Image (cartoon, rainbow, N blue to C red; front, side, top):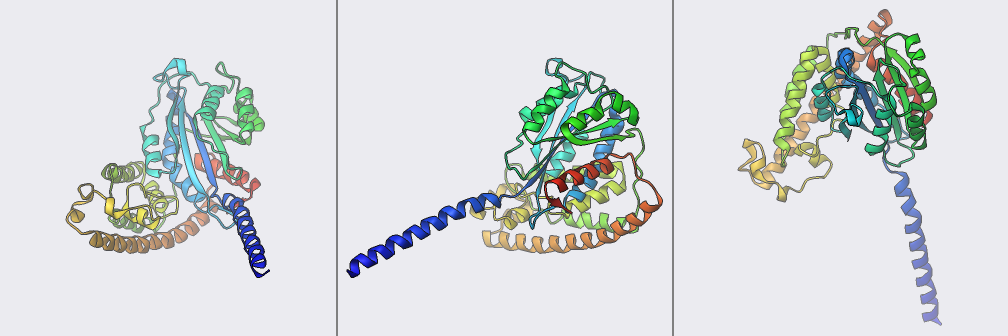
Length: 376
């Protein structure tokens, strides 16, 4: 009798354990981290130099704003993809369209690709570039992801063999919102069907003056932030096959931002202090933080000179020291940025900032994100 009772208890315990495990599985899926996916489809025909320059200059402002996004208690990832269209140097059989970058969270790579864009005359096929991005990009199936297309240009939205309505219908099936940015007069954008594209796509219709020179607000904190950026760069420790190349590209993108204007370099530095600037694929500090590195497998020939002859224990200690240093520098940058943002907010009350790319995009993203329970 006792044996029978023990068997029953054992079976009940096993059943409870299995049910508990089965019930736990969906919870893991529910906690999958959300991602804000933004595809930029930029017209790179002759007249669009101003648009490309605004995109280069305002990338970091957009990234900084999105770094504050939340989904419940979680902070979503950010991935950006990039297409160019309407450039006569691109293959005509492909509709003068090129995927410049698949969805990426590598902010330096996104910057690099933006700076590689060159304008040239061509035909702008809005419907076709939307449809191409739907087919080629990895949009994913997480229902809580925010999927957005921003298409910018200044020619009729109706050009090309693919009807924009057909392309937008496909986007809606994939839960992708279409936002249109007409570079020019508001009413001209309406007559050229850019507003209709946004209405059908569930997004926003926006206009910008793409030829307007961007006026950045200079603050008393900018110089100190630039100095901190130089110290920040010294905390990066490259490793792996692409480590040194990626490390070098970080400096190139710093220089690209500075060439546009010091205020752009300041915004980039702030992005580099945010949670969205992750270089764990090539930097030992980020990799160690995410527990993505096996020190026993690191090739010392691919490390900086000061680490080539160090033991594994010494390398780990060096990484920990640099991590502490980086954390302190980033904390100072964030503290200065709070003061900087307060200063800018005061100045913006005095000066309107309408008609710039970052302003219209941030407003649209925030509005659409809130509809899917994202918050700031």
